[in-house]
Image 1: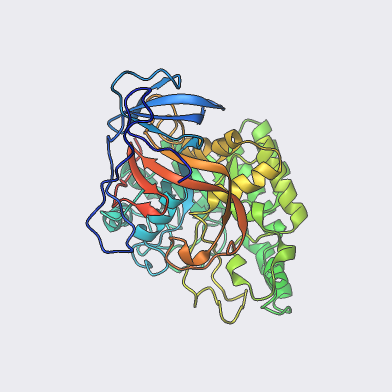
Image 2: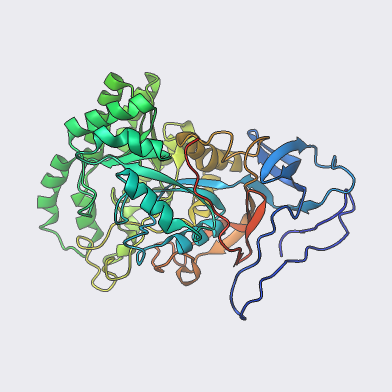
Length: 485
């Protein structure tokens, strides 16, 4: 193993080696028993806290961080879990995940999705209001989702509610049940039970959410440019990526972002653009930020990793909406990530099974759009960030601090600070990692990252003071539903 893991007395770190309390299990299974409160301190030489990286000792009590001390200042008799030369990051917070349970758990369920999260250093995720049945657009829909996750989650889970035609008057009730945010689409969603909102419905919804202080996450593409582009795409070979790219022009995103900025300027409701792919929308976002509007945007690892020029015919694992665009577009997204116009990077983990992905026919126009990367997000982003001169502190800002802030979890999740949950990721930033889709934890083993080499390896994930993942082994069901405070 790459790290020294010790339960030890203060400064006597050549003492007892960690003895895992293993479940009675069949050979080949991969579960370890949770080890809550098995240590009083986590310490490391490379702890990311307060915008710096350095040696630190972190006191943990009852699942919370209660004190930060110099690395060598640990009370006599304390039990210490030492990360050695690994980096200790806050647990990753992924606010854009589609789990689809209940109703479409054959696409992805809570057990497999949260295993993937734990293996990727994620300690909290927010599940989207679709594609489960029922969607979380009503109080009953939200509570049905809560019942579906009971006893299945390896990491903490918050829920995003949905804004759809006809429910703008009821958002206060769903918010009161503990939703962390709301989400809407401005174009077709691909499922019948969650439809998109038009401008008047978007306006009413944003006003209602502004009244309760809820953020609205928006899939920002408008139908008119998509309708026009569909005519051109219909003349192209559907097995070519060029056909899919032509069907989702930048103009659809740009016009949607422009609409949102105008509404936010008038209403002052909090709006957040999800999975931004169009670099030409960045000037609109910059203007909104310059005006001090409550407006922000995210992008995703796949937009920062892949380029349309490298996608072969029939490779539908790369299909998502909005689409992966050209390499020049990617460079401009990275520039916005570096300078803060894009505030966070989250996965938009959106699985389906092989038939829906048209893995055999390779038909991009019929395939489900979505990329499964919950387990790979940290590695993918770190690989690209490192190559562009960014630091692990930047990655923590983008993947921990900003997502926690979006959903009202500042000070609780995404930071190593007194009062926060004791959520940690032990990460080797220098290790090479070659993706093998068949050993990834999400349910359907489809991934455009297959056989790709990335930098970084997650060795241990700790949730509220309990080890939930360690070098390929998992604990059972340590996650909780996280409600809005």
